[in-house]
Amino acid sequence: MNWYTIALSAFLSLVFGHDTLAHGGGLDKLGCHLNKKLGGYHCHRGKFAGQTFSSKFEVIKAQQSGQEQPVKPLKGKPRVIDGDTIWIDGTKIRLHGIDAPEANQKCSKKNGKEYHCGLASTQALRALIGSKPVICKGTTYDRYNRMIAVCYSGTVNLNAELVRKGWALAYRRYSKDYVSIEQEAQNDARGMWVGEFEMPWKWRRR
Image (cartoon, rainbow, N blue to C red; front, top):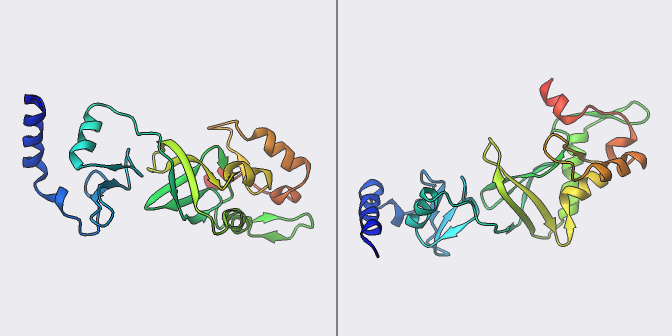
């Protein structure tokens, strides 16, 4: 251990005191806590969400060195929020490259009758997941501190499959990964494409 590491360690001890050793159920300023049950210093929010380190000191060193978040899948039983958003182990995840109708958004069927397409999209995602754990792979976060990721249930790419079934759209503003799949769903009149609907991003703006 060189003199710089010793000095930095002493400084951090003065600044952060003993909160590295305690965990009362909440998160510290880094969005992390000491996991006494499983061991390690685990982060739920921020740049290193979903990652486990040996100590708080290791996270701070990684931040100071400009280290990017490790490419490490986040795995667990998800809580589905809507057609393009889930939670896993305290981390909020936005499905990359797609946009689903909002939870309270309505669309019209072919006969003109309204229905809750936002709810239908949410239910479609829950059905795709079933009882299996989900694996999400992502390294970036948006301005709402959500991990942007491609998620899988078994071998099923949830992002792609929601678009294929017509319950989400290719979010061209951020990615063109699912444009051809969207065209396939539109041609076959699947999901929302069976009737009329407003693009989710336009609905939110309005």
